[in-house]
Length: 135
Image 1 (cartoon, rainbow, N blue to C red):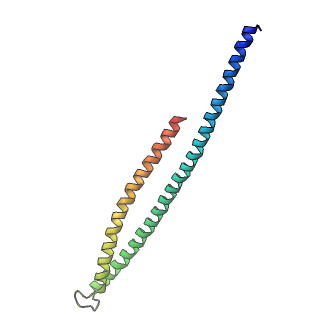
Image 2 (image 1 turned 180 degrees about the vertical axis):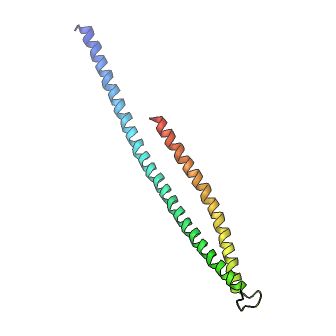
Image 3 (image 1 turned 30 degrees about the vertical axis):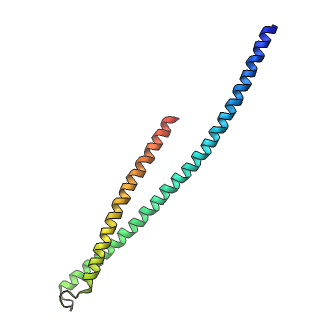
């Protein structure tokens, strides 16, 4: 190797070292980004798990309400055969009104849960597609 080619080689080597330093800085920044992304994924998982718990709670209420409707219906059938209460004095009428209000509240809750569910799942699927396309 001539002196000129040695000088050029050393210059090139210095450039490579400089490149490597920049690359290491890039990689360190990316690792920080990935740690944040993993934290974000953990938060996203917690949101999905919370939604799953909310769905389970809603299901339990719906099942309970269904059983109470069945019990109420049984009481209505019995009252049609004579219950000994004067007209309008049947205590089941008040329970019916309370059940009706409860049903209305749950119908509204069900719609909110449905909208939240569809939005959550759509965004999660969109995120997965974007991530799959990125790799």
